Image (tube, rainbow, N blue to C red; front, top):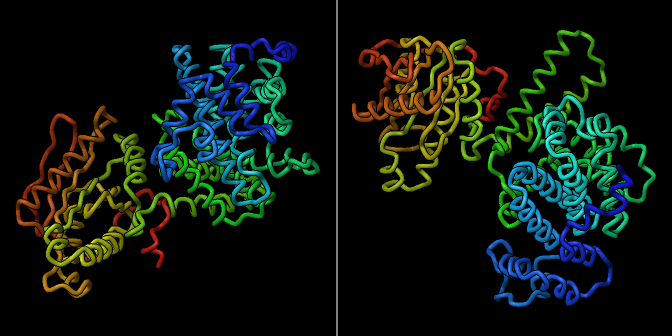
Length: 536
């Protein structure tokens, strides 16, 4: 099979202009005018380059009208990314029945490029331009596999994404060679610098196997490539816990990076993905928000712990690695999953946990509370945004203190949401009474206002017998409607609704006088870490 690749038959289908441009971009001492000339042979590509150079993403001081100026302004590595992105868009249009596979390949390659350029930046040991293009090309062999094996390869990729075995192990077992080996031959055939082929061949190594390459002059580039591949796997594949473990091991052992450094890389990559995906023709539809990805990784780590406990044969090395990984995930979660103003969980993280709770509907009843500060617009308009911010922060702390064992999140603005494993209407009503009274009686002194704050609450108790279609939107709508009913009643109160189906709900009697001064809600999602306000 490698002989087939070495004959370069497949490369003949790869556009000549793109091939020559990539070769010139990676060569030393090639003038911009020569690269611009090659680009001008493809009018669509040239027009795209000028359009991107003048876009807000690159903020030119004056309008850029020539290709040499555009290449200089954008940078050679990112021009290479535009070339490849343009060709991937053409591949997708020509092969509509394989569009999803090509899009997934290009998304992973783009994330690897973003990550590897960030490793170059923080380490100071890898040329940034070289790193970006290496990231784009190190999975190039997968393109050949997609074209050569069709649906057979699709099944292998799906199995690899489940995390049972690494993709390259499955390729070797089923097809006799790996995309890494194919990629090396392709990049040699394209006459690109030898380090590109080297990275393509070895970027699939595990952190343990990587140590065998420690004498290589390209070890820093290769270590960054393996770590970047782990970041892309975190975004694109299911075994996210292991991906973070690989990332932490390589960052610590090869780049002497702290947890703060690793967090910076993850944050920076996420910003790059959001800002540049459209420019580089990357389809992000279907990719979960990073908060939900972190939540999945946390769940995988916890399941691993449970399995280790059942087996009762955990080695000290695995325990140490697991603690490091948990700490890293915790740091990432604090930064990505928390609302920066209040320290509560943010909307993205809440949504992920809410969907997971709904998936257990019928087995676990729970209540969803929607909470809104009364007349908040008046506070902002009449007393200023600083007072408004104080009101939001203080209310958040109070909610977290009262709903100790529940998940409390800031949904947006002055609106909060709570998920609690409580299904008794009287107990939910008592909890709402308590928080309304506490905020009304303590807020004026706490935030130096003449008038106390009040809140309105709506609660929907999920008591369905099994998960139902559209339950997520319906339950939230019921709780939101109940909250507005409280507002219409004058605020400073709560309404609770029992939801037994999506065709109708049984509304409880008017607000009761039942009090519960020391309410301790049953544990809800007890594996979630406490918020910063709770820890302090």
